Length: 84
Figure 1 (cartoon, rainbow, N blue to C red):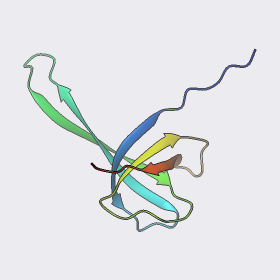
Figure 2 (cartoon, rainbow, N blue to C red):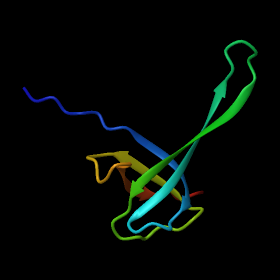
Figure 3 (spheres, helix red, strand yellow):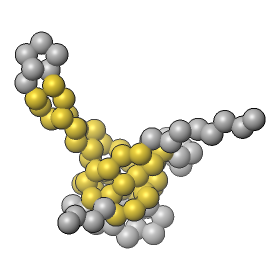
Figure 4 (cartoon, rainbow, N blue to C red):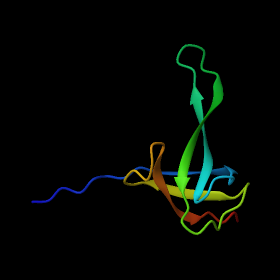
């Protein structure tokens, strides 16, 4: 019996494309404070592998966990998200 690893998937906005074959993607999420109940935003940045360099700053992309490509890069782009 083989077990398959569950790979995490996120959606975020591209904030930098200055590195070769790498995007910096910001993922925002809304969190509710446990004591006061106020909602606030938290964000995290991920280095994402983009083989063809086909994405630009400001685009929404979906990306998935994968094998390590480098010290800080263990995510790869799945697809561009279309906004309706």
